[in-house]
Length: 144
Image (cartoon, rainbow, N blue to C red; front, side, top):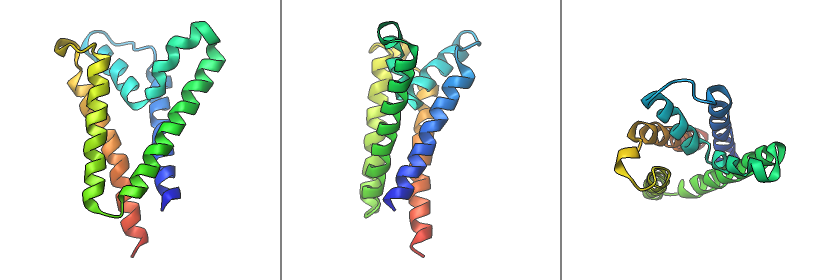
């Protein structure tokens, strides 16, 4: 089941990359631009490393972003596989992921409530919870 869980999360890591490539730079104005910007940072956390492009070059930056993002999602897949033993553990993992993601969103907002993007956080939580649900569903389907 570990391979399936990691595989689901690795495919999920591509969704963030796809969002980044298709919607960057944000062409909308105002709230829609903020939504896209924060959503990409929450679903493709490796994007935050793009600030290093001036220091190490664009190719190295993209490589670093992709490698770190892939490793993060693989780790999340392993955690999800380990949490499948008990439903309570899986729910605890979901709660921990929500807390960490909320903290990251708060940090991205600079710790100011006026810049905290609730719609982007809600969409990213839905994304990560969908990945967890897929892992749970595949694990239940394969045990029958």
